[in-house]
Length: 153
Image (cartoon, helix red, strand yellow):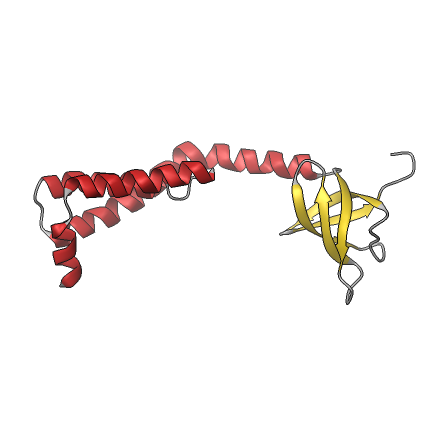
């Protein structure tokens, strides 16, 4: 009951502001996870302005959030997956400088992948060394499988 009264007490400008803050924060972070939630929250300004009851406002917020999420897949889903595939493809064969080797398991550690930041790395070809240079063989989940860089590379 308290939630319904709280929703009914929120002015349309507050809904609009909350939606814009969420959307701007999402854009600043460079993701698209919250952008459509921000749009749904901004739509709640319309429901509030129309004077709809709190129960209906909450139901419409849920519906617009889900609908905007599914609608977003049509516009964002394909390009986001293509961008992800491109990043993974760029990651393959990138040079890696080992920053830290796990003292308990010398085949795992952290490495700076050229152009891609710091990653968890692992080797199937023996212990890692901070003085050697490696290349990414493949990406396995959140880790990069690395192999020693050949002398001619």
